[in-house]
Length: 279
Ligand code: C2E
Ligand code: CA
Ligand code: CA
Ligand code: CA
Image 1: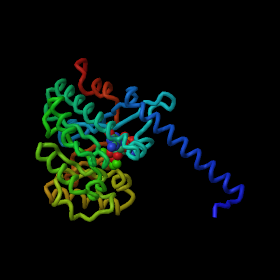
Image 2: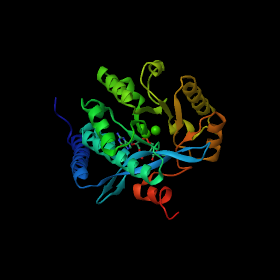
Image 3: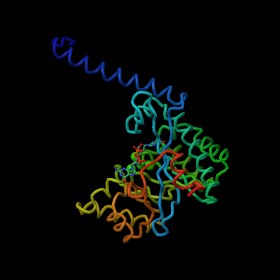
Image 4: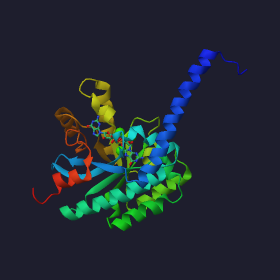
């Protein structure tokens, strides 16, 4: 029956309306954001601690909202994925990140500098992902080995035949594939030697309290050992302290990313800090 008491109905419907209105407004605003150039990329350095050199960057999406200011992706990625807006946004991210990498490679003379780009499952569902990615690389004239695609474990596991085929084609082209947030998904390890993967990325949640929570230290340890034994690269994200750097180095994990080295920053700021001639 649809008979609901006045009070609870009122409460329920008001709550739903607010949520829906907010979501719709956000969707509309996001839809325009791309056209209005309100989306931008921040970049976070990835460091080889044995040489203390920046080997590359991860591109991280931001939204310069006219009223809300700088908005982080956790506020809008889910909506972008639900509405499939992530597809045009993701294409833009790929192009922009490749172009930026090219400029930094030219400024530094280091043509093996890398760029990591996050991809959503939705993008893999498009049958032209391969073309989109290879076109971004060719337009920027960077070498394919320099583009690292970060895919979450859940995307990889949920893989359809098409996902797997696309991953294989991209890898055959030379592009590197990293498993993002490794260890946080609900998966068996069986896929690791079946799938075309180059890198495991240790999620920041495992590093966060390795110093106080031994079980996290054990997991971080196992991921590093696993990567070494399977001949995969391993990079740690969310590195914030000297102790974490030490912990990772002792276990031969020397590729790192995190606030300890640098927060994600706008492209112009990265240029000034790392690639400016006046330095
Ligand atoms: P992620 O790929 O796991 O990226 C790492 C997140 O950790 C980033 O958050 C980064 O700013 C943050 N982080 C980096 N170093 C540290 C640290 O030392 N400590 C802590 N506590 N955090 C650190 P951000 O930029 O807010 O991005 C959140 C998520 O949004 C990303 O998680 C990624 O899943 C998604 N995302 C970002 N950009 C894109 C994009 O272009 N496309 C897609 N599909 N997803 C994106
Ligand atoms: Ca990532
Ligand atoms: Ca992560
Ligand atoms: Ca993530």
